[in-house]
Structure formats: C-alpha cells, structure tokens
Length: 623
Ligand code: GTP
Ligand code: SPV
Ligand code: MN
Image (cartoon, rainbow, N blue to C red; front, top):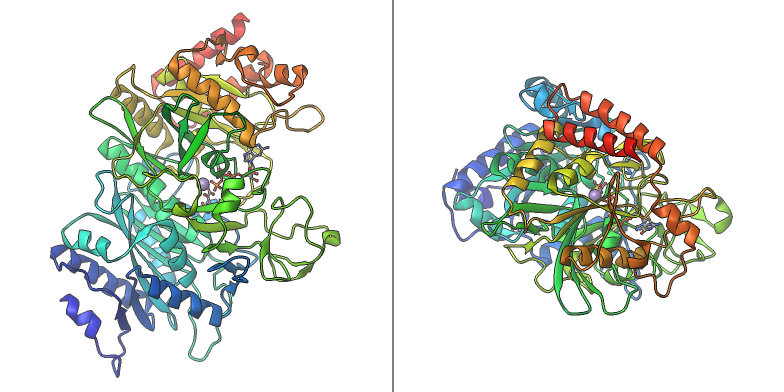
C-alpha cells in the first residue's frame, strides 16, 4: 500500500479505522511498506476506531494532553506553580512493573535461562493473540515511531510502539525521540523493533471510559528471535513505555549479545575534578536504589562537579581505541518521586519546575503536587494518590511509594551540554551497587575486569516498591539486570567477559562495588549518602588516576579511611569501621549462596567466574 492511501483513507462509510497523520515523512522508501503492512495487521487484530500516526510535534502533544484532561485521564496542575504539568492517577492495582507477568519467549528455553519466565513462542502467541483481538475497540490506536539514542547515531536503534494509551504516547514523547525523522530512517531501510501495547480495555459503543483503563490479566512478552514486544493489560511505567525496559534493556541486551555490545541498567555521569579534568562513570543499581540520585549528584566537597548524562539505561560499546564508549539511549527521566527533595536531590527538584507528568503523587489544594520527602513537613491537607482526602494523621503515605515523574532530560539544570552526542562518552569507571543493610562495604575496588564481572554477578539488594514483591526482602540482582536481561544470565556473564577482552587492558574502565545503604545495629544508615557520595566518587577517581593507594582485603581493594575526604561531615570512627568491616563468616555464607545461584545455570556459568569464587573462598579462609 502506498503511504498516500492511509492519509486519505475515507472516514465514512467503511468499517476500517480512520487514520490521521500529522507529518508525512520526506522519503517513501522500501522500509515504509513493511511498517504500513504491520500497522494494518495490528489494526485488523485489535480493531481500533481510529489510527493516529504520531509526528512528535508540539501541537500534537498539546492536543493530546488537552484531550486527556477533558476525558479526566490527567489533572492539569496549577500553571502558577507547575506550568505545563499534569497528574495521572493509575488504577490502584496497576502501580509498578509486574515481573511475574513478564516473559521471554525465545525459541529455546535455555536461552531465557533460569532467572526469566520463559514461554514457548508459539504457545504464548496462541495465548495472547485472542486477548489482543478487538482489544482496542472504541479507542484510538497510536503509532509511535521512536529512536533510542540520537536519530541516525552509530549506537542508536529504532522502534515503533503501537498503543491504545494516550498516557503512554505522552510518556514516550518525553522519554524517547519521537517523530517523522524516525520514519525517514525506517523509509531508508533502517532496522526497527516492533512493540505492541494495549491496556486491554475495549469500549462498547456508548460505554464511558475510565481514568486509567487496564486489565487484571497482564502479559509483557518479549520475542528476542524476531525482535518484538507485546504488552497487554497494564498502563504503568516499564510495562507500557516499551522503549524503556522492554526494548532498551531486554531486547537490546539480545542485540548487544549478537553485535558485541552491552545494554545496561546504568546511570551515566561526567565527573569534573577540582583540576578541571573530566571522567565518565556508569553505575548499575537495582530499581529504586539511587541511580537518578547519583545521576544528578551535587557534590558536597568543594571543587567537584557532576554533569548528568543519563539516569537509568546505558548502552556500552567497545571502541576502536580500546575504550568502552557509552550512550544514554533515552531522552527523559522516569524517576521515583518519594525521597526526592531539596536535601536529597535538589537537581531533580529543579528539573521538575514544569512540563512534567506526575503519576500517583499527592495533590495539594493549590493545584501543585507533593510526595513524601519533597519537604520535611507534609502540607496540612492533601488529596492522596488514590484521590482520597489525606492529612498527616491519615497514617498512610500520600504518594504511592512507586509514584513517578516523567520529564525531559534537557530540563535538568546540570545536564551535560553534549548529553545527546551520538558517539557517546568513554568510560573511566563502572560501579555496581545495591541496598545492603549489612556485609557489603561502602566501596570496594575489583582487582581486574574478571573480578569486576564476578562482583557484578553477585549483586544482591533488598527489594523496593519499583516492582511487585515484598519490600525489604533480599534478592540476588546480578548487574541490577535480573528483571531486564533478555537472555540467559550465564551467557550474559560470559558476554561481559568477552567485551572485556575487546578493551585495551590499560583503557578499560575500572570496576567498583558501592553500598550507600549499610545500617548500624540501631537501624540507622551509617553513611550520609546523597551529595556526600561525591566523597566516594573522589576516591574512585583518585584510584583511576593512580594517585591514591588501597588496602587489599579478601573481597577486593578498600580505601584507607584516612584517604577518604571527610572534611565537613562527622561520621563517627565506629561507623566508619563498620562501613568497611568484612565479616568473614557472613561472606563465607554469601559464597555458599553464590555457588547455589551459579548451579541453577546447569553448567553455563563461565569457568572464570567459578575460579573467582574459589579464589574468594581461599582469601576468606586465610584471614
Ligand atoms: P529506578 O528509576 O526504579 O531504576 O530507580 P533509581 O535507581 O533511579 O532510584 P532513585 O535514585 O530514584 O532512588 C530511589 C530511592 O533511594 C529514593 O527514595 C532516594 O531518596 C533513595 N536514595 C538514593 N540515594 C540514596 C543515598 O545515597 N542514601 C540513601 N539513604 N538513600 C538514597
Ligand atoms: C525501574 O523499575 O527500574 C524503573 C521504572 O526504572 S520502570 O520503567 O517502571 O521499569
Ligand atoms: Mn530503572
């Protein structure tokens, strides 16, 4: 079918959906035919009333937001406090990623591995196709072409999301680069990933819509062999913005495995030393464990500066120069609201001045928003995230623990001027971390790449509200990728080792493990965290420079506490000791857990990592 057909398709009296198309791409190459065919195919299956090709223009976005306000799907915030900003309230059952409903449908079960829910592709297609049949009835089907990374960039990749959620469209518009220039790339034959999303709430004729349509039945299905994502039933975050976790991590990790690069759950920053020298650091922490905060770090030690490059996802590729180059494929932040305040993350607070979509935060009587941690004292009166009256005496949080903000990266006051440079930045250090009340020191350096990969493979963290499950429960989350790796995690460990071999040994980023969350016996955090994490970064940079020594321990290289810049804060001596104490017995127990974890992979874990485990045990037994 020629593209002209779709824009001029008659509105009446055919049964076929009516298409609207904002900006026609400049080129009508071969690639468009495949896209048009696919859109027709999905429309025939889901039977929407209308098809809207998103062109990414400001006018289109404004119209979409206006329509959502009129339909009661968004609340317009008071422009005096929060211009261009909106509040969405989700259905109370649809508040976070649903890992139990997330599937990797690879041809072979062993390619999904023991950490993923596997489904046989044919079987799961047979299950979900009937769910998608007619699922968009009464709704508009949006076609959203997007680019991860600068359009046409050497590390960038393209996708198209079909969705019946206007909220998802508005979110993708902030989180990615959306628009007709992406169609231009597709027309010229650039490969693209197919993603289909339906909230699973068709409307009968005359049936009134609800504020947050969704379905109790949910499926988030990835087909790594055909580069497709099908998501059904949820409108929230990673379940609905398919460019993010589904594409930029699960599918991209598979593409990266095949092409020799890495798709990682990492923030990306440029750290500028008092001498004016720039370093690039990427850090993988599990969901709601501090990536956005570190991404927007305001160092408390004089002279240091941090520029933000990304807060959630980084794509890493070995360069011809033997260094590891990184881009942030996203264009916005989908950040955790609670805990974001003047004293913790002032840069985020400043980023949120306007043009922000808030989801599941509380509403103030003056038409602004609030969440726990924004200010020390809550306002006297609020409407909570479910729309009920709330006062500080209500005894429940006003904002949902996984309430979020969606905002353009460019709005961050400390965004790096070149944050969307297509070629990315060369990494000097990689950090792995998690929430560990015990055992894991504030910072420890790996002796080499292989030891660093071993560290990454052993990350465990206490669960947060970012996904279903019991908050606080310790779970293994290797490389902070447990819910996001699109293939067998043991193969992924092997891939990390392989990527390391492509780097020049003296130019590979140094690897560290950090833990801002260690607690004393009294349950208080031992480390002040936030802006003071710059003190740890300072040590890391001096290690990269080779200008400071370290103490060998069984688990890696530790700082001499006298080498940490602690000027201006008072961390009691006893707390410092505790922050770096290595308890041999509990580490031996950890090695047992590692062994049990590795064994679940049926012999696929690389021998080099088993050797690291044996070496760790040997070192622990010697002390
Ligand atoms: P996702 O977007 O889910 O991937 O999360 P994230 O890793 O970006 O987490 P984020 O930075 O939003 O932090 C989540 C929570 O951890 C917030 O409530 C923060 O206040 C808290 N947090 C972040 N950094 C620190 C820290 O250094 N110390 C302590 N104690 N809490 C922190
Ligand atoms: C995470 O859970 O790691 C997030 C939020 O960044 S979501 O996009 O919902 O996955
Ligand atoms: Mn995340």
